[in-house]
Image (cartoon, rainbow over all chains, first blue to last red; front, top):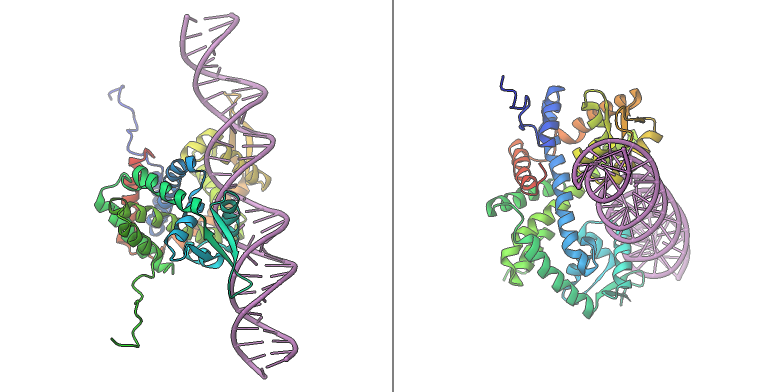
Length: 172
Length: 172
DNA sequence: GTCAGATACTAGGACATCCTACTAAATTTC
DNA sequence: GAAATTTAGTAGGATGTCCTAGTATCTGAC
């Protein structure tokens, strides 16, 4: 009866919680939690991808290309076949072609013929590429990875739970 | 000393665990967990998006367009301004224009002038659009949301933890 | 040895996302 | 009330992802 109090308090501000309520009220209880989990995943992904891309922008690389650089950085010889890159990063072959095209244009990697398999192409990190990978990592560590906005315990929960999820999906 | 046992047992099969080890061994301990959490998020997103898109393919809609349909489906009048759609789904205005263009071409929604604001455009669900939303939801519920590959407890953990994360990012 | 099938990569196209303009209309300021 | 600012949408462009094809090369079955 107090006119200054909104009739609908801000209990429903989270769109995902709202969607969950809708699911339940439509009789889809058994799917509601799964829907909420997957939708949360989509939003969280979007948020963090944006944050990461913002940090990487000054280096003129995307997260996709950064991942390629780091994979090469961590490899013993600093070089890997295209196919291996795709397998490790779990992306389609044509996405690797795309990423390597751009990295090569920026002189961060270089395509070389594979010594024993003439079908294959080795991608090798250049000196510039290695330096950029290190600087970009320092920036990401400082500006994103060290503080994700979650408690250390929650961070571990995310890794563990999503790990289960990836495992059950055959990711490793 | 047992020659039949591989020197490197399959303890390192998970690429994210491997990256975590690399982070630690490069002295980036304080960022290693955050890196693993965000990378896990990226992979899990990719896996589930692919699963969802596969289920939606027979209906000729993407997940992005499905989300628009459901938002309209849940709205009282079955119609919302473009801007509202963008806010609720947390995507850029131009992504809404793109999605609505395609939905309208498929006769699933229809653009209408806003009754009181001539700048705005209302997007209204058509009968066909509503029917498709219901059928697509039934398929997603049955084939993805009801069984995500996680225990019910883990599903709730995901929602809760990612909810914290979204909240700390200002998502709601 | 040869030939069929598998594998590595690229080309071209469909979608989704974001960004930077740009137009039109509403709101705020003075 | 008129001018400045904000807000709603669209257009065009860059990137990334996937898919389907097509070429070259390797492997394995006979």
